[in-house]
Length: 122
Image (cartoon, rainbow, N blue to C red):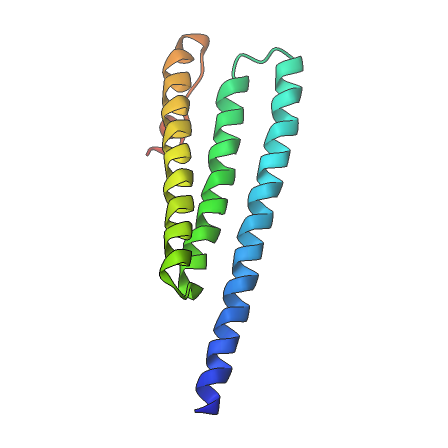
């Protein structure tokens, strides 16, 4: 039974490292997007809102990934409810930001903008 405890401990360490990685990458993406957003704003780039929203959406995706990974090690109903609420909140924010991106992309084609979907074929 000792090897099961070892495997469980290894799983917890791996999940904790994965969560930290996702969280740090999310924070880094958010910071870089914010700094670039300020730079685009100063330059009066008409795509500032779109670029900032895309960066925020990407940061939220990483943060959401960390929360989903956190569900692997939850132990009781209180933790499950808390993680579930965080996931729902971040998913709602992601949905709203993607909606904003879609609206910004629709408003920009007359300025010669090609959307991310048109560029990637998705």
